[in-house]
Every structure is written in C-alpha cells, then in structure tokens.
Image (tube, rainbow, N blue to C red; front, side):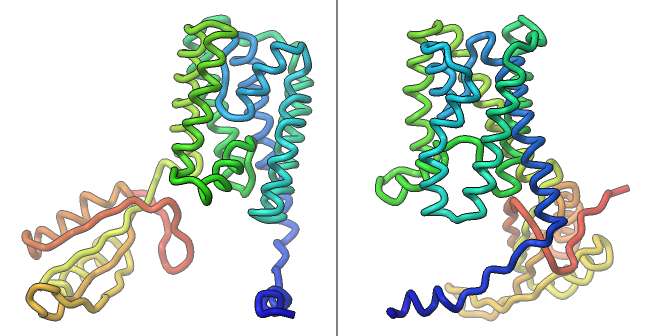
Length: 296
C-alpha cells in the first residue's frame, strides 16, 4: 500500500444530518422545477435558448421532435459520471437528482400554455426564473448543466479559465441557434443568458453581501475600539512590517455588511484620514461572531 492509499484509508467522511439532507433535497427540487418552468413556459416555445448542454438539448429536441426533458437527461449523463469521478459522490448525486427533477418537470409542462408571447417579457422573466433555479441548485451543492463540469476538467489541461471555456462553447451554441431558428432569436438568447448569469450570482452570494476590510493606521487601537463600540463588529489585530521603512505595523482586519461600509470608512477617517484601507467583496461568511443585522 502506497502513501496515498494509506492517507485515503484514514479519512472519515462525516455524514450530513438527515434534516440537512432533507432541506437540501427540497431546495434542489425547487431549483430544478424553476428551471423547467423557465424553459417550457417562457423560452423554448419562443425558440429562445439557454447556453451549455441545455442549449444543445433545445436544438436537438427541435430537430428530432423528441421531448426536451428526455434529451437533457441523456446528454447530461456522461458529465454526471465525470463529476462523480473527478469532483465527488455528493456533487454527482445532487446533480443527478436535480437533472432528473428538471427532466420530469419539463415533460409534465410540455403541453402547458405559455405565459406570454411577448418576446421581451419571455426573455427577461425566463432569464430571471432560470437564474434563480440554477443558482439555488449550485448553492446547495449540485449543477443542472454538464458544461460546467466539462469546463472544470478542461481547465486543468488548457490555458483558459472555466469562464472562458464556457463562453467558447456558448458562442457556437448561439451561432448554431442563429442558423436554425433566426438571428433575432439568437440575440434574445444571449440576453437571456446574461440575465440568468447575473441572477445566479445574486442567488449564490445574496443581496446583502459582506465586505472584508484591511486597515493600516497609527491609530489602530482607537479605530478598532470604535468599530467594536459603534458597529458592533469584532476586529482582529495582525502584526505587519513595512517593506520600505521596516517599521512595525498594526493591521486591523474586520468583516462588515455592504450597508455598513460607509459607516466604517467614516469611523476610520475620524481618527486617521490618511489611513490605508483595502476593501473586498466576500462571497460567504461563516462562524465566529459575525452575524448579518439590519441597520436602523
């Protein structure tokens, strides 16, 4: 037995509580159903496409007359297997379950009357509902399209980012849609894709995003105490050294909400208007004493 095998043998995978698994399944179900509603009630009847494997499935279903749900499920199976081998069992099973729900709901909704025939409304609301569905499933550990899985694997072999690879695939999908449906429909499809892309970000990261702040000041102690007293946020002091001067520096690190960012800056300026401040977005914050709260 080699070293890697020995390490693998000692790893204990902690099972998720049944309550967590149940709610994850419920939310993935809701996400997959939202995507199916978007496709069958808004996009597909008007020949508007999503990107990725779903876009290819819409084209193939149109050309062959097959049910979209069946095509989506069959085309994604190889990528679910790749996800199982390369990413993990939990991800693969969550993805398989999500795509199964998507396929079944799509078949059930196939003959439902479309909500509106206004192309702009179909594009906007179809993109919003699509983004909400996909975002929920991604947030809870799965995927509804094999393109992301393939892009992650190709990223290790090609000098391109995951986003660039996905955009490369979608360029050809939307170009094909232009020849098969019309260039007008292809342009509407691109609008839908970008709306869904932005909504996915909002669903995954949340509207009330957090900010991390790094502050370097000679008044670090006073600023730190003011942040604790007036914002109610914890701070961490880090030791630093100026590369140019060699002087010891006290660095403040803290996390605040987007709504608290302006107040934080005003506190810093009150004590030291020449302080160095670096602020960055944070996708997720867990643990510690950080809690999201409303500002009155």
